[in-house]
Image: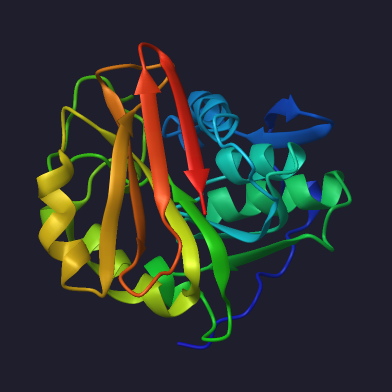
Length: 244
């Protein structure tokens, strides 16, 4: 498959979008495109505010981006200098494109459409990868809207995760960091450990979500040849993270 940035859609064909703003960047979406990222984006910001002595990441990739809530909010808060989004679902791509054009940030954002990491060209490299991937291996989870596209929340046999772990290493800078948002009802750290370790990666730690404690959790992953280390210190509800 040949990967290339997506072609902007005509604004005259756009749906009746809603929007949420972070530091002057308005992110556009429809309700059926929100797989939780609308709320999880603020949780990600809380997490990255816990990093000490952290310089801004150069290029960030949001995997399974949907309309890009997490990516755009982190770009707006200067956590990264440039952003890459990728998703398979055309309405999500259309919304992400509309956000980029409307905010006049085309020089800092690249959007690809495709199946998993196949959307990315070989030369794309990131020092930060984030994602709110599907959390379950089963359909018809009660907490999700009946109108939601099932592939937003279902990862059958964890195939999407497996493909991600097996392919992301070549796109990750040697000392880059992966931070995934997962659901404790659907998985735990040992669900993914064999997939990670067989792909030239290593688990650097995990942590409960700050806003959704004891339900959602973060999984930190690095390359197995990384010279950097992630340090996590937790005391009560307070955390401190260092990447050095």
